[in-house]
Length: 329
Image 1 (tube, rainbow, N blue to C red):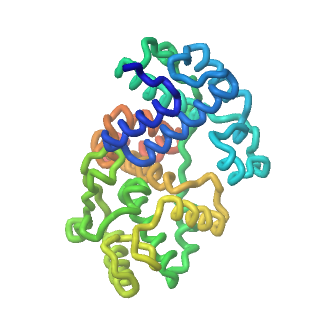
Image 2 (image 1 turned 30 degrees about the horizontal axis):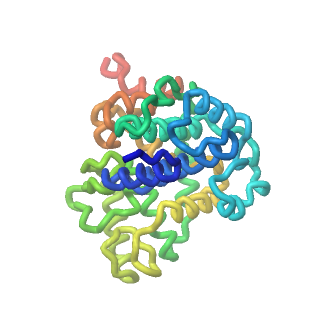
């Protein structure tokens, strides 16, 4: 029986395979978007409709085209283009970031590795294609004054702002990702032990881990639970008042942008900055890198070291004062 090499067919088969391996929905969506975009480009720009016709030169031409075209100049379907109104965007035709292109390269490599492993193609076009070199962007941190300004801008008489205020404090104090915090159940909390048990299905690495919080945050959480229970019956720690379900990541990010603007802070700040601040402050306060890596849920200490290289001379000067040999003399 002949193997069907049609691009659309093989993409569908690959996505079915991904589903059986229980990949996260976000990962699967990233794969499918990359493959649909590449499939359309191959058909329209190269006249290629089967996966066996894609070679290394085709891949390299695609990468070059991504660099030349700029943002929002190519869509996998006309409906998506009509919805997004690309010409109205401020960054229309601005360069696609190296990070984005490298994500495309990674996703294409996974797809063609799958095809090669299952004997659908004989030669893997991604074998010699490497990711683009990129300059590491320094992580963004909020200063103490900025954090105080941000936290002072909440009107906690509103359910949503009270909820978001507590979430921000908890992420800043525990180092949790937004996706982990937004799906917490009340039963995940161990208030008396000042810890939270993160379920494997909600963590990035699909592994259970424990994070911790301070007595100050414990007090805030106890108060929040009483407040929440007066208005919403939900197993979620941070529910939406109207339906009791967990708050979506996108919804919280939108709220966070509103709070940042209200406080007059840098619009580049995102909820992930809270995690960055947690990590940097832990290092500045003397936490060892191994403990920090475990709390953050990184796969190795090396990942943690590479992620937080932004301690500058001022930071080191402050930290040095705790360790001067003359302190006890």
